[in-house]
Amino acid sequence: MTRKGIGWILAFALLVVLFTYEAPDRSSWTAWSLPLAGTVIAIDAGHGGKDGGATSATGEVVEKDVTLAISMYLRDFLQQSGAYVIMTREEDKDLASPEADANRKRKSEDIRNRVKLVNENTPDFLISIHVNSIPSPKWSGAQTFYSPGFKKSAEMSYLIQDEIKRVIGNTDRVPKLTNNVFLIREVACPAVLVEVGFVSNTQEAKQLQSVDYQKAMANAIYQGILRQYSGEKVSVTPES
Image 1 (cartoon, rainbow, N blue to C red):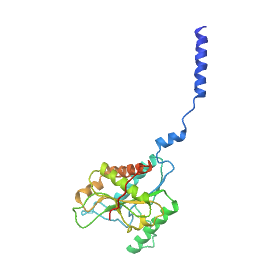
Image 2: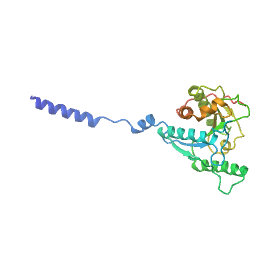
Image 3: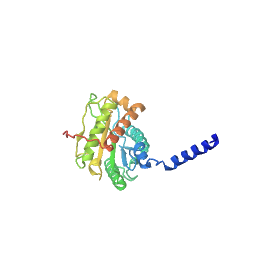
Image 4: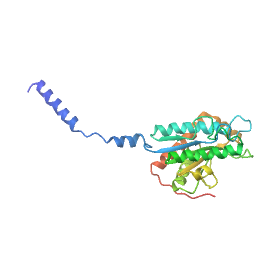
C-alpha cells in the first residue's frame, strides 16, 4: 500500500474517533467553574446617604463608605462564581423617601425598605455588611451575627467567621445569635450580618480604610459562602 493510501486510512480513523467521542456534559463544566451558578444572593451595604453610620475618632473613616466598598468587592467575587447578586445600594444613598426628614423616621423607613427590596427579589441568602463602634477604643475584631429563623443562617455565620479568622487573622470572636437586628430577623430568607471591625479602634479604623483590607474581608466572606454552598457540614453551638 502506498504512503498516500495509509495516510487516507489514518485520516479516516481519526475522523471516526472524533465523531464518536462523547463530549463532557456542559452542566458539569458550569458546576466546576461557576460554583454559585443559579444562586441568588442579596448584599446589604449598611447605612448610606444622610445616614453615615459610625465614624472613627478622627472622622476620616465613615461606616457607610466602608460597607459599600466591601459590598462591591464581595459582589464582584460572587458574580465571577456565577451568582446573581441583588444589592440594596450601589452608591452613597439610603432607601428612605426624600420626604422622610426626621432622622429617626428616615432610619426606620430605610430599614423597612431594605427588607421589602430583599423579600421582593426572593434571594437564597442575604449578607448585611456593617461596622462596629463602642465608646472604648480597646475592642477590635470582626464578628458575624444571625437570627434563629433559619438553620442555614447559623451555618453560614460560622463558616464566614471561620474564614475571617483564617484570612484576616485578627479576631478570636465567635458567631452570635441575636433576635434584635431588624433586617436579618424580618427578611424571608437565611441571613447573616457581618460587623467587619471596630471603627472605634484606632488601628482597626486604619485597616477598614485600606483597599487591601476591604478586599481581604470581602474574600473571607466569599470563601465562607463557597464553603456553605459546597455542602460542608457545620456544628453550631449558639453563643448568647
